Every structure is written in C-alpha cells, then in structure tokens.
Length: 448
Image 1: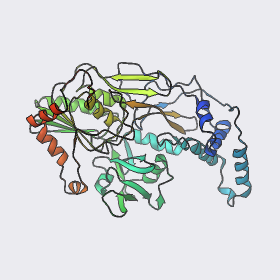
Image 2: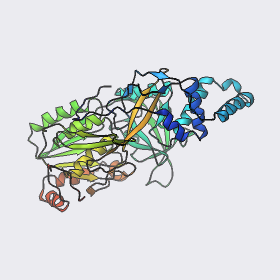
Image 3: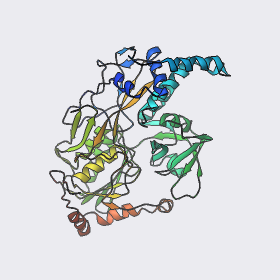
Image 4: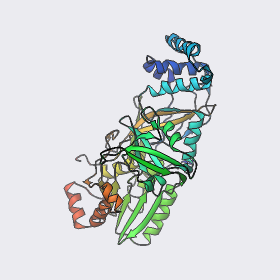
C-alpha cells in the first residue's frame, strides 16, 4: 500500500517492549496462554525491530515486513497453569483429533491479545491477515461495509457508497447481532469479516439491532465485487459539493482532480461530505486538509512514553483557503474523517453539520510475523489541534441535523439541503459570528 507524506515533522520510531506489556497483563489466563506461543512458535519484537516511521490513524496501518525476532523467556512468570491446561485438554478432550497444535497456539495468542481489552489491538491468523491485506488493496468480494467494535458490540461504522450493504439497507450505527446463525458477541472484527466476506453472488444474512426498530431485523445481502472509489463531486448552483467515501490510497489524486475541475467553475463555497466515511490514511487526510488550512498543526499524536508526541502540519498554500466551507458528518464518520472535521472545528475554519461522529481516536501499527500472521497493536492516541481527545466521544457538530431512516428510504437529505441553504449566506455568517468563527483563522481558538 502506498503512503503519501504531507507532514512537516518526522514521526518517532515506536519501539515495542513486549516484556513490559506482558508483565502487566499476564495474570489473566489468556496472557499465560499467549506467552506459551512466544516461547514455542512466535517471535518477540525487540528494540532493533524496524518499526514503522509514520503510524497511521485507522484500520489501515503500515506493515512491518522485515524484523529481527528473538525468542525470550519472561522472568518471574509461572506458566504452570498454561501447561496444566494444555496437558489436561489433550488427555481428556473427547475429540482429540480436532486438537491441532497450531490452532491451539493461535487461540492462545488471541486470548493474550484480547485480554488487553482494546478492540483495535488484535492478533490475526495467516488467513485473517490475508483477508485484511486484500481489503487494503482496494478491490475485494464482500458486502462493502466498515465495521468496528463499539461498547463491546459489533457495529456498522458505515456502508460504502453504492455497495451491496448500502443497497440492502444496512445503516451506520446498526449493531450486528448475528452473522447467519452465529452470535457476534465473542467475535473479533477480523473473525466477523471472514464470516461476512464471501464470493460474488452468494448471500449472507445479518441480524441487526437498530435504534428505531422495535425488534431485530434480518438483512439479506448479496455479495459482490467491491471496488473502492473515494471521491465524487458536482456543482450545486454556485457550490462545489465534494463527497469523500474513504481516505484510501487514491483519494489524494482523485481529490486533486476534483479540485482542478471545480476551480474552473469558480465556486463560491465548498461542502465536503464525510458522512459514512470510516476513515483511512492519516497522511491522506492531512494532504486534503492542506487545501483548506495552510501550514498549521492539524493533528497531534501521543504515545505511552513521556515526550512521545508528534505534530502533523499541513502544506503551504491551498486552493480553498478563503472560501466558505461546510463539512457534513454523522456517526459513520470515523478516524481520519474525525481528524479532518476536528481540525476544521478547532481552527474555526468552517461549520460542521450533521450528527456526532463515531469516536475513534487511536493509532495502530500492523506488525507481520514470518508465518503470515500479524499483530495490529494500538501504539498511540491522536488529538485535535487544541489537544482534545475524541476517543469514544466523537465530534459534536456546530449545527446538529439528523437524517432519519425514513429520510434515507425516501431519498431525502435534510442535512445537505441545510448546508446548501447556508453556504456563503448572511445566515451562515451570523452562525459563525455567534461561534466566534473566522475563516482561515491563524490559530485555534479556545472558546468553543
């Protein structure tokens, strides 16, 4: 996967100290099981590992392909419980032929990682990792929906625009209770993805719980080939309306093409629609922000060590630095989308319209192991320019407008209609004056 750098400061190397983490979490049996893996089959990441220089915000982190591994044995850790469990299982389990050493080891590792209690820190088997890398490529077969674990529930972040999931009626915020006949409670995101994915033309039934519905709904989705296109745009009267579905590999190129075309129309305002945009690449979000905010810190990251922080700065100049801006968001706007909206809001660069966003403010790195498995691990949190954490909280829009299920079914969009009615008008200026907003403000304001 390609990564385009738009930062002005160099990211620090996030070196992993696995021993430290394990001493904290090993009292739980899952951790004890996982340590068995580190002794018997997998490898620990040491200080000389080539860790990624620029971690990403979202579920598309860079992959460490070349690492030096070394087997280690933790001190003062009693693994008797693990070996007693292993031997007792082998001696007593009814269907011993179903017990394979490799699957036991992978299961132990999953238990170790899951015990951290972070839904974004996960161990992936070779099969799960291959599926993950396929989704990063921009083309795969499935239903086309971004999912995450929120409040310990498997939740739809956003269906992709034009995807089978969207056409079948899956909505952002839907809780996936069952995949076919399998209850999702104990599934990781990667395990859920493997069950939802499938060949083009096949069906999958999701039982979902929706806020407005009185009982669970069964949604049958026909899988298809998913090709990810990030940017669509059109002129709506004198306003350039730009919809960004995800911050993927090609989004910067697609956005710049849209900008070039839009400038020929001399727009008097810009609406950036980030609704149901589940995120993507940090660098892509910053690059696009550079068109609206020049040479400013638009996001900060903070690791676990004192002083382990970084500031990310937009490029100089931009096509839309002084033009009225409205950004549309909803609960399907996550991660890199929240970085974009958070910077616009902190700098009072424009108005944020819609619903409170998803609330994903953590940074992950993906570390690949030699057998094809991998560990996606949370290494930092990101903050808005004013230093605000939005994790599990989200970003509250300046003007709250809800697009209901009925609106969607009737193809009515009151959020976009409101934005079009506001952009560049005296009413918009009044709202901005009330909030102390000044377009292209030099520094973030503290009075929000």
